Length: 340
View (spheres, rainbow, N blue to C red):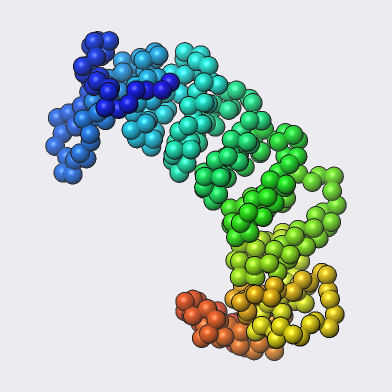
């Protein structure tokens, strides 16, 4: 329902059709130490809202009132909850309500209550198909909005329909083509491939891991200092229980200074794509990765790991100097305990 412009709306206390409702003041018989100064319009609407909640009224005018309040304050969870309760009691057309949510969600992408209300509606309509397109459009407004991505994962997992899942990898790949540093898109890809528990059931899991390793390595080669891709690489290895040292040949060139541009590689390794020519090297994530490889090897390799942590602390990642010093100290404790 579209409301007239706010300045054209009379207060509820001035509307004859609301004369039967007794408004309730928020601070009735209370003197708060730090009162919130609401607008007259918001105070008036919420006073009447408390009045209709007290009388347990559920009617079309309650929907108009709650919409008014939500437009003024989309985080008013009590108004959302009572609105949903009223919709169910009146058996209102939920497709109409979803159209209203299309508008409000775009306006208030970061308001949790908007998305929670939408979940409740779709649980009732049992029609998740249009939601993926709506979400894709919402992500054009804010490509990293947590609530939007979370809602998409909920749609996929809750309904668990093959038609919903069928194009999801294509979708997330397009998002990463648009912005390879989109951490939310990388997280979503991991969810689709590894965490859903229902996808790729007929695929060879080793083949899936190989595919994902190839995918992420190609993206690292394009943008080596993209922390999101390195996190995804670690996630794939951890999920597959693969030791980090298996990727040492790939990681090593990223942990070294930029080689001369006129020095071509002696051997082209398609499994280990090299950094792009304009890459800023060494890459902090690669240096850390190499240190982790040496630390896991133990023994004399702790010396190499310590050298790499020192280079991070003193040169390549000084903003986290204290963290790298902590890693060095912890490794020395471990070595001392082992020697003892």
